[in-house]
Length: 175
Image 1 (spheres, rainbow, N blue to C red):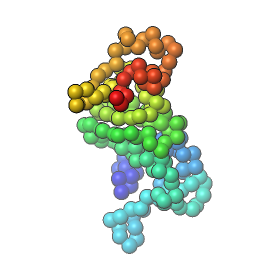
Image 2 (cartoon, rainbow, N blue to C red):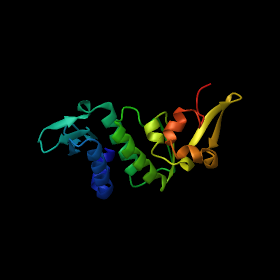
Image 3 (tube, rainbow, N blue to C red):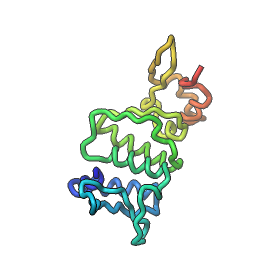
């Protein structure tokens, strides 16, 4: 129903969502959003593949594709909430989709506060040190800290941010 609302009332935002999904799932053409004839208050998520006339429903999509559709819809909507919290949005996503997701997160962060927790090296690699906060456990509680760019500057000549995280240079590792 939310996609239906966007298509009817915010066509530009709806188009951005569809275009973003197409980049990640090139087989996707568009949603077929129509009220259920037996219950006009309900709209089933259906989509059209390529130039086909056949309709598919959400059961035909992978978990990763469904996740990306939800995340694109959240991040590209016209009226973002004041804060967005997302836990491990990369789950089930192809590495290219993770890169697209990072772009959507960065775009949304210019309009609202976005907080994302991740364990994905690929996702971390899409950000700069000043955009990353590392969480460590200390004295029975979570301790949040920004990266010291001076301390990691020489490392950044040879390694990506994600590689530094894997090498435990950044912290955030269970102990």
